[in-house]
Length: 596
Image (cartoon, rainbow, N blue to C red; front, side, top):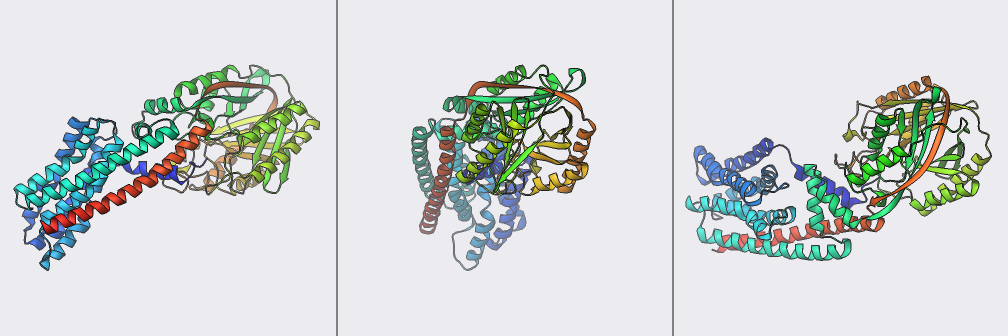
């Protein structure tokens, strides 16, 4: 699924920035920025190169590094704002010197300005808004510790400048004091308003949630975020249908597991990586190859905690069919209405229904559609396992009411057709390829590609489940076309909607759908090879089915909508506040340094 709009995608892109490279790399960037800006500027003030390097080291670099060491180890001792990330903040805060110091030097040659020390003070002054905003919002220490931490470097550096005579004491103190006061007042007022409004809307202070989010995203520590989201979530029922296939002597060959959980909210939090987790869990405990396509669900069905994920895994295992109950199945039936496509196959009294809009853009299908199809199945005496193929997307989109209606109509036609279709003995074959040629950043999760090939009544079909989040439009058709040469007459290519791939790359969706950023011919080759293995594995088979449900703590539709809308709104307001405080800081600093 898409990450629910530009607000959340923007959040992922922002977090990647504050993740930052290694400490050594950040120190190198910071030192380079400082030394380069001073080397380009200070000779214009008549200073020799040796003196320039001395000032860069003693007046800026060392006080800044020492200040952040004190901040990280003594004042804050915070899990998020570590020394490494604080140096990232410094590299960002000092980057304007590359522009401001050369401009100051040019003015100096025309007799304008008050000296290079004042230019350094000006850079410090305009960095105060981002410093204050970062320290106040990104750590949960007492407010006074946060404020003090934001002022350590702006205190250390001016002391050296004043002692060395590089800047005037009164002007420096006035400029930094006034800008600090404005930044602190503005940020504190903003935080108070945001927390009050957010608590009323979401049920918890947004910045508290944001800090918990950072702990998980940056430090792989999900406990705080799980606790917060569990409090905000609700109990809901997760349905699971299993079609298990058995070979000779009742040996488990594999299974299709269709469940109504949603793989989210992101990365490995909650059920974000549950499709591959469930696959690995069942295969390691029970044997065979398991396909876990995307059921009909949205982010409201995200399972929140590791505890409930474990509970769900054990539940599915305990309800896995232990032995076959029938050895018959129908052929695959397909129906199309405008852009809506439905395929179906019935196994004893359970119908597998797969929905897609490919090659049109598609998203998570409405939960109501799955419930409607189950009701239709009940009226026909059929259990129904409904799969959202989740296999065509390039831009943010939603399934429209008209599209959902068409999907429901063609699915209804397929169910009625399956009800009267003859069933016969069949052959089944399974295979799996972990797709080690590809990475999470390419849009491929650890579940790789799993294949089920079925053959009966002269028809050979292949079901493919790729552990990814949606698929580039048209790629499904390319894959199916490539399989026809293997004697596969029909089939479907599905993705799991894994969220392990989200937030790792900078892209419009916050991830790459399968096929959007990888070697397509190579992936098709791997898929064809896997299907060949599935064909080679074909043997007379039997099957058993089960249907079960379990109540777990999920995100809930209202909570998810409130959270995402709150993220967008806070993002807009943070941007506006930052621009306003920067304008105020620049104005105050220029006036004070020019007049005093």
